[in-house]
Image 1 (tube, one colour):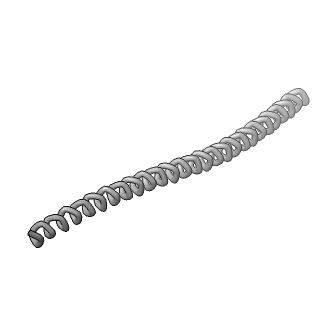
Image 2 (spheres, one colour):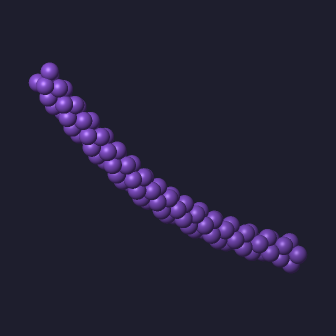
Image 3 (cartoon, rainbow, N blue to C red):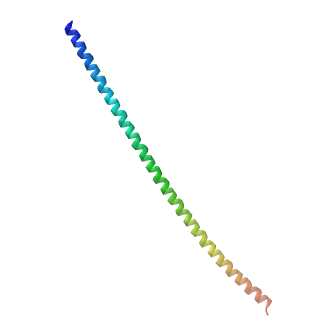
Length: 98
């Protein structure tokens, strides 16, 4: 009986040691998972910031190109209009003056 009780106590100790080891493994895994999640969130935020920065830069570039093109088109239209006003004035003068 004594031997049986001794074996049972040894098995109980082994079971408790295995439980404690399993708890430590679970705690370590949970800590690693939390660390991975924090790192991933940091990475996502960095990527999102980089994307927003690139998007803002591209938007500004497109806006600047559109503004430059509009100014160029406006200047061209003004020059054409000025030339046509000049032609109209000459045509009127020829028609009025003999």
